[in-house]
Structure formats: C-alpha cells, structure tokens
Length: 68
Image (cartoon, rainbow, N blue to C red):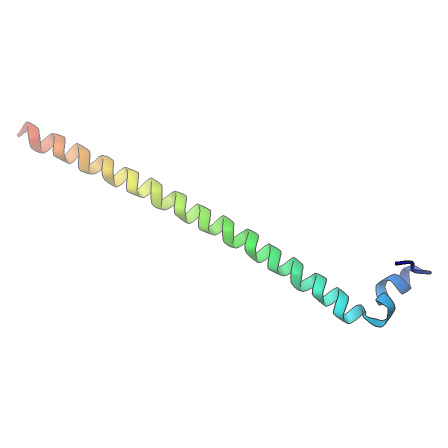
C-alpha cells in the first residue's frame, strides 16, 4: 500500500483506530504469553529441584535407618 505522507500512514486510510488497536492488543497478548511462559518454566524448575532434594533426603534417611 502506498501512502503520500507519514500522517497518511498513521491514519491508515481512515482505519487507524482498528489497525493500531489491533497491533496494540496483539503486542500485549504476545507479552502476556512470554511472561506467563517464563513464570511457568521457573515454577516447574523449582518444583523439580524441590522434588529432587526431597528424594535425596529420603535416600539419606533410609541409609541412616539401615545402619541402626
């Protein structure tokens, strides 16, 4: 599409409200997905770390129990 000036570009042929709001909503949705995924990954890695530590404590407790 060809625009005669920068103001015509930003006006988007009379559809600026629709065009720019859709870009804004899409950008916000992508940021939401990014931060949500990062939080989920951090939580899952923390859960795995806690589970591994718990299993190690159980293993150590069984070793102590066997020595008694």
